[in-house]
Image 1 (tube, rainbow, N blue to C red):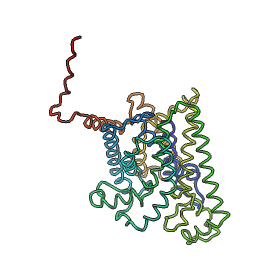
Image 2: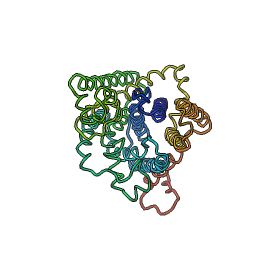
Image 3: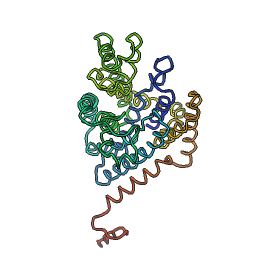
Image 4: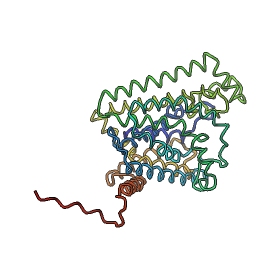
Length: 391
């Protein structure tokens, strides 16, 4: 799982460094390969992590577990809001995801007891119905009064605006992105040591991703969807020049035709299903691959990076905010990848968790212990055990 998170991090780095489109208007290889998919994998593995920290195949849903998840969500959300200051100051086109994750974790609390089959059904429901709900609410809920990523200041000055941004108007709208978290929770409740489970993830994920991509392509190319989407969203660009843009650029979602888009981050049912399937297939492939000792050793640096995703995600946003090497994207991407892998390998040899993962884990542990503390306890001493009876 750490190796999968490491791959997702490298994909997100590439999208943030190279952007969506090249100078000639064609989509960049980073956007074609990792656009939308890396963020989806990141979200699915967040659900996996949530499943692992709440008992894995045997869910633990007592007060301590709920308190730990809540504390983890609040701390991650705080880091995301603080990171928003750096992103906004540098005018980055990164769209910090951490505040959205925090709300996803909080909304997942009632789902922790559900079975994998139920969670899978919810994932598909959110993937299909979520985009429709977003379209209906897009005009009903006012847009946030702030520009860019939400910050801690916005939380106090525009709390409803922040909530509206996280639920509907943001780049990772929670009403649809719950699909990824539910999918991750479902996978985390399975026996991931089973080769059969890994094969099902691989084949089932490929089938869902390919099916969604094929249906979207047929609707767009053979049934006039491409032309209608261009008329509704991209009519400023001449039709002959706009086909690539319509296929790969994210529509603003102002019309129903946007629900036919397969573009990354379009949050249409087809985008959600194909990225969800891609994430499941990648999980299955890596589970099968890491059963081989040489492959597991080769992926060890990626696994080290994936064991501290919060640290490396925040670090790469701060590096991008400096503007260093901005005119040399290849060099910048190489520095981010090499620096992340080298730091992760060295740090993991000394410390088990990443620098930012340590306070989050400590906060979750403290919250768990506080919730499990016997009611009515007035001292810091633990209650004395009963004396054993003599036989």
